[in-house]
Amino acid sequence: MSARRSPVVQRWYRYWVTFATLLNKEVLRFSRIWMQTILPSAITTTLYFVIFGRLIGARIGAMDGFAYVDFIVPGLVLMAVITNAYSNVVSSFYSSKFSRFVEELLVSPAPPWVILAGFVAGGVARGVVVGIVVMLVAMLFTNVTPYNLAVTLLVFVLTAVLFALGGFINAVFANSFDDISIVPTFVLTPLTYLGGVFYSIDMLPPFWQWASKLNPVLYMVNAFRYGLLGTADIPLSIAFIIIIGFIVVLVLISLTLLKRGVGIKQ
Image (cartoon, rainbow, N blue to C red; front, side, top):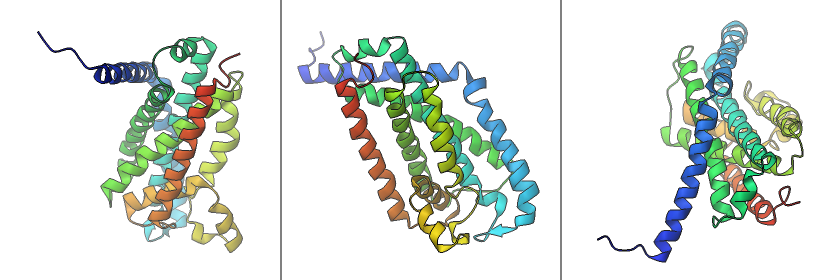
């Protein structure tokens, strides 16, 4: 007869079951409709490489010592990660609010951080899967191999975590399905396109270089570019401080909103 689990072990086992159940739900949710969640990013990236990489890139020439098609790989991969990690959480959590499923979670013994971790992990899972697919597409057009694999993987995951948290906060305040598309359209798209995806900020005038450094996406793209190509416009240490700092702030905000039931408890 096996020994009974201690109360601490039982509690953490319940936490794990809750987290694993939420993660499994999120993975099944986006994998069942892969033609809507995964395939579009692969098609969009292919078009980027054909148009910007092959056609326009041939006229632009080298950038930071790399062929233009190679230079844009890190930014295009992170664009896909950012969009999908964010979209997965914002749509899933808002749907949970809409169907009142989240209320059952709040009255369960699971603490807020476990609930948050489950939704964020689902967003990270989708971001990572789509990011890998986009990277495989990139390999059809380039010969990029990671310069520093550890940095590449770390930035890859941290970026997905950060924007999954952003999607959670958007979903908390959303009052309709239209509200969950406002931030991606008017915030994420400008930030990603102005985040050094298609150019080096060294090409910009001094004022716009300074203005670009206010964009958090710039630090993620440059850190990821260092991991893949070994070059960056921003020191790696500063990039990690910015990324981790944003994650800590968003975690604290998300937990506070969840504990208070903002946007959930009427």
